[in-house]
Amino acid sequence: MIKEVIKTIYYNGGRGGEIMKCQCDFCGKEFERFYKKVPPKQFHNYICFNEWNIKNNEGNKFDRLYKQKTNEGYIRIYMPDFTFTNKDGWILEHTYVVSKKIGRKLYPYEVVHHKKGIKDDNRLKELELTPKGEHNTQVQKVYQENIKLKEKIKELELLLVCKV
Image 1 (cartoon, rainbow, N blue to C red):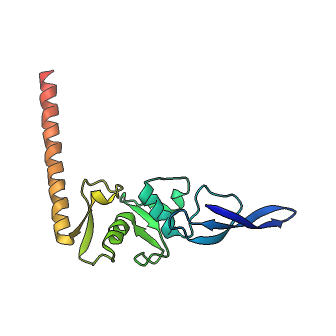
Image 2: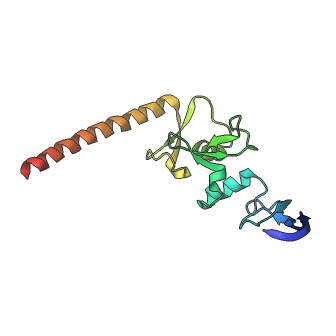
Image 3: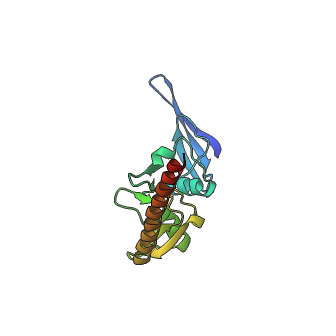
């Protein structure tokens, strides 16, 4: 939320932008920022921006700067100020959501499991913290069940073709 314009900056004979006093739309902290064009929401850092996005389940046109889909189908978020990120400042969103809930970094033997297997569904109710060995067992069971279901579909398709 914009509170007031502190200073208007001009350069090359034209209007450049304005330094504005703002209030973070997530945590309420006051800060000053330079804007050429004012975005609809103001956040004082990436953590507040990503927290707001997760809480409101809203995507916007700025999302692609701070969220990316990995080749494996997981969502990673850019949070350079957060302590549990990799060296480039990125963290997998499901890891972030669970570590935020439990209030600590995940141990090396822990893994976050997507209950329904949908890798980009990072709502807390769809995530489960499990030991690595148990997670592999769960994933293997789903994989085996998937193979059996595919075989059953093929059998039913053959039966359907034979009847016609």
